[in-house]
Image (spheres, helix red, strand yellow):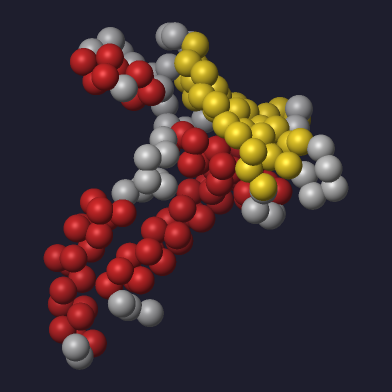
Length: 146
């Protein structure tokens, strides 16, 4: 297919690709994905993930805890704290309690070190840029565009 025809199709196909690919890994909550990407950005390497958990502290915050195995031994840990963000309890919150919490953390703790603004904002920005690049790569691959 000529390049001009492919470019013409992009505005029609891109929204469908976006809906089908989603913003996060399939079945993974966006808060967990962002927290993982914040760890990746901060460490500069792909951690060997061991486990994670999401704890909801009703009307206070949701805490995502990640654990990974360190290359030299031992375990690394990070927590991302997402504030409660619902104006009122509704059916969405009852069906999926995580929807009541922000999708941007206000606190990030990496191996016991509390990372605050402006460094926190920089890390979130870098993690979101990483997610955007991954999304574009998936869209290009789906469309067969390089």
